[in-house]
Length: 116
Picture 1 (cartoon, rainbow, N blue to C red):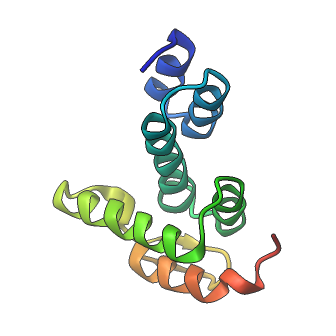
Picture 2: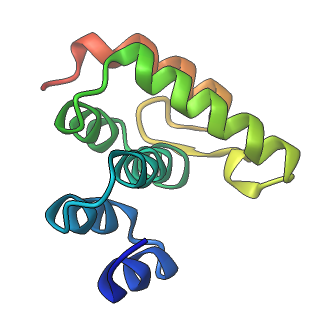
């Protein structure tokens, strides 16, 4: 990966910024895509932000099915690592603490209702 700024953004966990910087630096499609997928994962799993996740997906040209697959793939990896990101987290839409799998199912149902 080229660029100290991009490396710093990744080290700090700023994946949306790193993806943008990678685009501007004209890095390879694979490097940009990898950072975009990490940004989608972070917005969904860490932040549990339905609006932000859909906005990023649309900005990156990803469909609902693309996002579902990305999040399921990352979720499987996180499960193998016993990551806490999958643990129940407060969801303002349901008003309860829900695990990531349940959040993802709800997000997929809401997809069409969310503004573009």
